[in-house]
Image 1 (cartoon, one colour):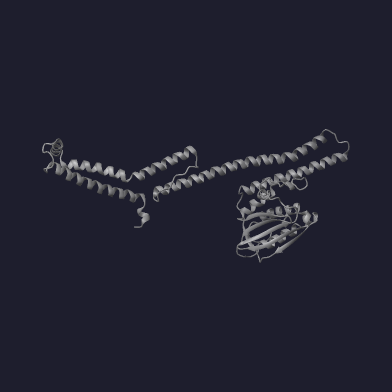
Image 2 (tube, helix red, strand yellow; image 1 turned 45 degrees about the horizontal axis):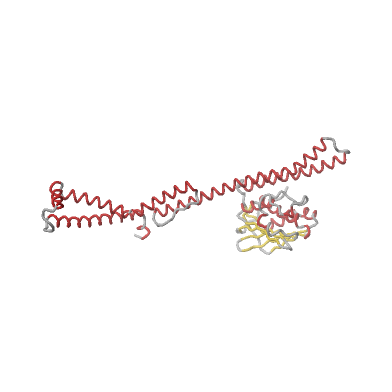
Length: 379
């Protein structure tokens, strides 16, 4: 019988019962000796009042009922004394639960024992901590929903206001000639495309961050996948006057992934590198293995991202100050979508930036090599 088993509350009550029995028996023996000496032995005055009372009780009630009554009373007294700490701790746990209902889940119950009551207190504290975390997450989700609605409303209203303004100008026949009307229609059309992209990005962000359908994972050769994606990005690169270069420092990099999801991720990162790295004239894609991780680096050589912006660039609707111009400002959802997809693949994305270059670094858990799956072909 180990010490942990003996330390349970069951054995504490058994021990209290045994100690109470022994203590009550000892008290009875002492009382019996005392009464015997006072009644039958020549100690004290023979006609003392207490002697007459004791003789009357013994003659009319009996010594056995008397000793039984004293024994039960003394047993209950000793049992109450020996179990007092347990009862007091149980009351403290009860008061702690009531305190939690009054002041909130921040209250904690002190864990003072290793028995069932201590485990109960620890479990209540853990339950309170999880409930508090759940309430905080719910509050954050509610705030995030409010921020999302606010951000969407703001970003939708901007191009929509422009579209309505130009259409109203045309509707009221203020255009003096057809060329002027075509000019305003063209601007309204471009604003509509911006609006459409924002709505598409919003739907994609909502799908990714709400979990969506389970990923259809397959073994993917990340190196071949990135080479194909880089080739498919050549038209966008050439339009921006840029080229790409792949730095391959690893053998095959096999990961479990959904190619359809990763295409969106790395398209966003490459488009981001093109948008903000035109000055550097090239995009570099680094492929390497670090421990049990496959690492992909998308690098551009444009203007650096400010140190204050780096912690926030993966937040939805966040746009660094340098990207808020009419020509480069995106929806503010591209990097948030990329982050959501990568995290669904149990990966990590981060960013580094200095005066010479900016790196977006993605890491995925490696898996064993296998038969190459067909790569994704864009329609």
